[in-house]
Image (cartoon, rainbow, N blue to C red):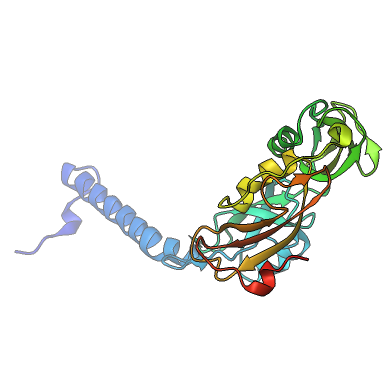
Length: 265
């Protein structure tokens, strides 16, 4: 039996249902073509780009570098790193290696031209060991020690680029602060025992005694474990004075020191 569509007139129930069915079919067809044909082709469906690494790159080169990869960028933040030149990329998001669509915008954190400043902490009347720790906690570095006459082994003043500082003065983050230290009356005192200590641990008694590291000699293989001090000069308990130089021989515990390295001057 053949279906006579002409008999379903618009003003009949059958005609209305037929027209609704035709309209729904047309909408369904349009939706299928849009989502499965037009949209994938216009958005590069199943196509992605690997985000390149821009960290350390000058911002002036990003347009050309990312443009060749059909990517864009925007500067969303700034920070400071003393290890990178000004106006270079410190961080990016998405990270290098991520998969993104063409035209994706990469968020960039740029290194500032000038470092932020930090206030100079109060180091006066404290020990060199304390000053070293306080400077590190304030993102500053300790420079040279200038010894002056005085009855105590304490910090007398702080300097930056030869200029005496007062507490609260602002200096660039990462600045090197020199210390003016009293010599404690220039009296002799026993050399600390550094043997079997690590180099990092030895810094505390050496700097605390206002001594200076001299020649550091590595003995044997120092990469396979925890290297320690095998020999020191001056020897433990030898009499020293502020500013004296301390030479060290460092290696794995039990390593024999070659005779040439062990000769006294």
